Length: 233
Image 1 (tube, rainbow, N blue to C red):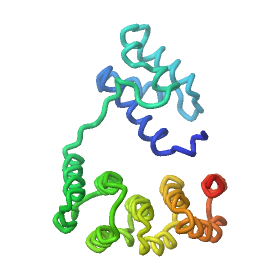
Image 2: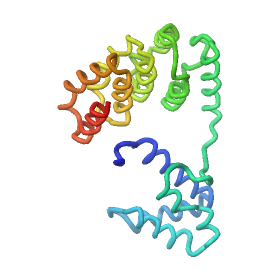
Image 3: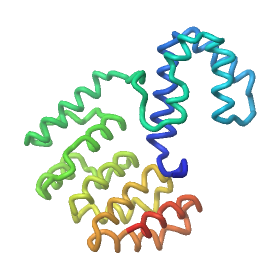
Image 4: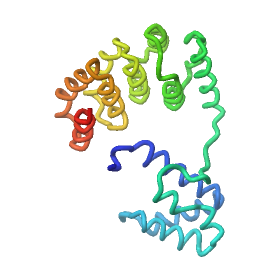
């Protein structure tokens, strides 16, 4: 699998958790000092995985066998998933969103959910955390109250379209027709194309038609990635 295939989960989320885990293990002052020295040593230079691990061992771990074992560097870098030493952020804000997810899943009216001040992360947590199977009536209620099909936030629109298309919510197709040609970032459009293709005769022709009109404006890597989704089905 190429790095472009799992941009969000691998490069961003796992990488961020890896760095946060090191910070907690060694303490913020020591970690800040290391980072400053690292950027001074490697300014305007490329880096490799092996080079980063070598630098960490020489300039942060410095032969401390207990720290080396605690950090589990090889597991983080060369094995799939998250090692058992991963440090996860605990967010009171996201716990409130989780409560909203539970309320909606239990049948609470959408208008009763306090979403007015949500930012991107709250919206993503909510939309990605909802049950994957929802009725047309429920999706219509959501779309009307939250104006999701017309959201100007590309992250919100992407997450909404994946959910809506997965339930063959017909009004979402017009939103996808407008969204996919306008947005070029794979992180946002790949899941929507995949959701359309997974719906077979209902969604795949839509994906093919949109892609045919949009491909000239996509980056070549994006074109190849979407072609793979369309061909795999």
